[in-house]
Image (cartoon, rainbow, N blue to C red; front, side, top):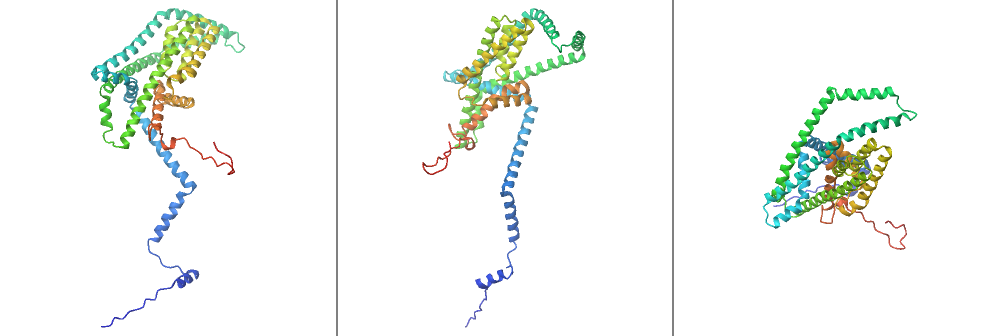
Length: 408
């Protein structure tokens, strides 16, 4: 049985090349147009403008997420602010809780003792300030009136001073505002704000107690899904955050105490009334970096101005500047070290943003939260290994005689 073979006439390479030269387009499969479209789209996004557009879209997306998160946290400020304060205080009391566990003290008892200590300090400070102000209030009121008259007399010596009629109108406007319904509604609003602050402090105390008592168990529950590298990273983040919060609280408290004692001695020497309440105010405001010290000094200078005159107020300003310079340039670097490694410009920017978003509480929380976030970046890939994008870049130096300029 014979099989006949048929010869298939396939075009040779030379024939195909000649057809392409003559303008004939060989037929392709139907997937080719889709491939070409995908290639053109990828080429469109791979050039400089495409990469810039991609980065811009990513930045907008991240910004939208951040704005939504900030809006949500601001709406839940009655919960988020006490929680943040409780976390910071829990980190500050972490050494005490570790000591109590080593000495077989019940966690509930150790947490209760820490909470009682904190509430006692806060309550005693507030009561002391109110009591001191009430004792010297009458004397301060008399000196304030005399000082106001001296300021008015000094203003009348200026070439652009207001006349007596304008001053009388200003006094009448102030009296009318004090006796108006707007002042009463403002006072009621202040009472409501005090009530809200009391509720927030109560919630913070409860959260702090449970964080101190059951903090290790809560943390183990949170990191239970992680293993290996992820678990090690979570542990590094926990240790670094506790170190940053604890170091910030202890160093800021020591610096605030230095400010308060220094300004108290200066006010006593200059015979400024309310020296002790002003020193305690300095102690409290010193927990807001940069802005707090300036605000406390301004209040002290104002009290000195209305009570003892412009020269005494100028001397108070000099005392405040000297104390703040010693605290900021000598004491704080020794206390904080590398715990809060933030540039002064970053501190000022985050305090301004925190004040705009959360008022006084936002100003208090802005720096420690930012320092903790930066600390997390510093230990992201290891104890002394920051995240890849945050590592210092090293540049290779050219070999001697290779030409070119060395880069440092």
